[in-house]
Image (cartoon, rainbow, N blue to C red; front, side, top):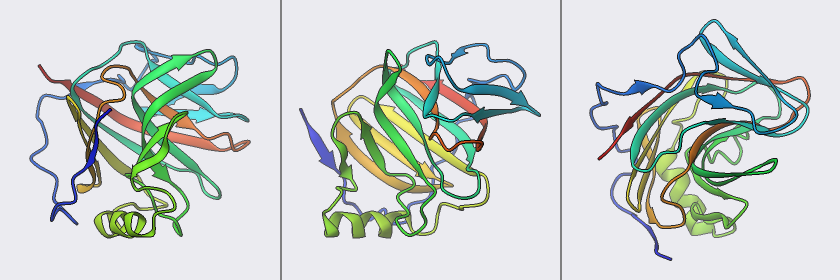
Length: 209
């Protein structure tokens, strides 16, 4: 397995020109193309947004799998304790979604939004490496104040072969190479806080040849 972190000068790198031909993954009206693989969790379409509510952690996943792509999506966390993420190239097993996750971190003391988490596997293995003070400090330097705790945040994920990039509101937070999974679903997460609603909108993708 190859894992590499690009520690370049992109501390606050600006987002490249946004692709004009991204296609909607969510039509703003129905759940077409999506499914809840769990026997719990409530999903509603409200004013062009996906609202996830539940008492236990669950994911809403795409019916289609993706390989190389550019993905964009907006997320708004609920107030209080909250955590979410955009899973990508993820694997679905009974009542579990495993694999890469672009972190959406409601803990502003930690502030790891835009980090790369390996759910069900190596966890915080590269961007940042949990417990490695140098790696954690380097990640915070890259991410800065890109994530806005009580506002909508736009995430962008680019996957080209082993090369993975994550942007938060135009700031490059993760730029790595890794070869765990080459293909899988995209998913959005409810972290399990009772009564809380996680909101998502503008979910779009461009598949790359």
